[in-house]
Length: 328
Image (tube, rainbow, N blue to C red; front, side):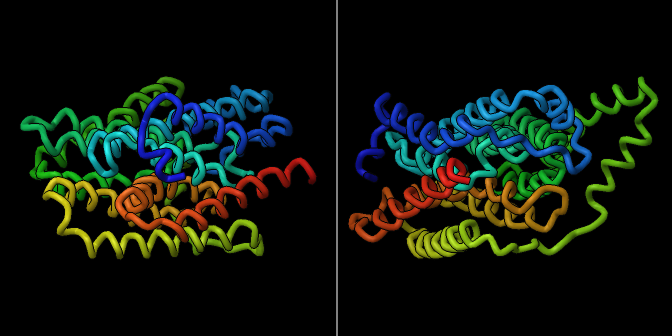
């Protein structure tokens, strides 16, 4: 199976789209409603008000966002040689890892904000080989700001971007300042709108309330979710340890770009401690590091017997987990 996705011809992308369609089919037949805003998230609130009475459009929009994110994720990692350039495994992995439980099969704030964060991620990667990079650090901050207006806890990735700029040799007060200006820009536009309608003070107070408390993630007794989640987390940890052991095989640029991906994984873990949205939706953020790190590992090793068996078992579990909706 992994050999099939070593290439990136149209056939592979058609198979990826069909795989996503199969995983999402239960939600197309019995639409899962997009979650109502539980935090002060202005952009998501507007989108929710527009689509709350159109469940089929919610599901279709969520599916298209997922598919676009998968292909863009593959482009990011292939373009920056995190995975081989001719591989489409990262896109296939993203589809699986962002669609393996029923609650993910609809439009939600996490999948939306993740797409904008990937644009910021690409800007940081691109700054490595640029002599003039202020426009890219501004872009990274700007799209992180948009992601934050959709899913407020995404603000934590601002710190990730600052660390990533240091790793990618774009450090200095100008890069930090341009990133900060970038993230402020979308807030400035929406603040002007609220000021015009005399809602700025109230909305600002509600938005800052999003960050007044931190909670320990509540682990329910949903074994169909948590068993595969912890298996994925354990496998990801093992693969990261293995990657650290083979770090000398990569170029300096490759090491730095891998380090940026690991820092993204580290900051993603903190999102589980923010209240407001269920634990399950936050798991979708993990699809990006899983797609990059696991795909790189699978395409690097020669003997992939047990890894392929584990992969197939997980795909079968995702299908069984999602299609259980048809029987419930």
